[in-house]
Image (cartoon, rainbow, N blue to C red; front, side, top):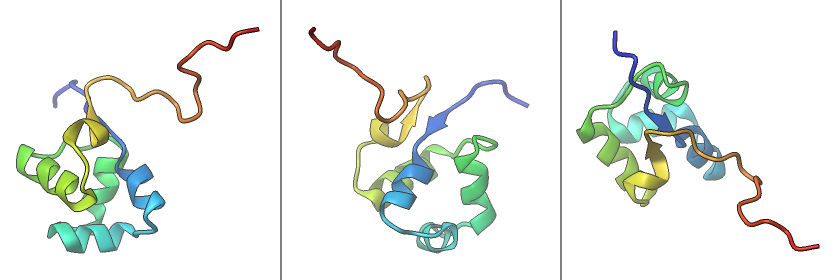
Length: 82
């Protein structure tokens, strides 16, 4: 088993659009449990599946997948001035 981790925002994108795991799975042609495994980071998609996911959400690959953890939503990226 590989120790390489691929981080993703599949769950966030899916929730943002009000799409169930089953709906996404049907659109991608995979089992709905596969979507769960992907979201939890228990499975890394093939390049082909990753590109299909990005095409489905109509976003670039780097919006969905990363080799480093994504910053938390709402985390400050610019320091506030006093």
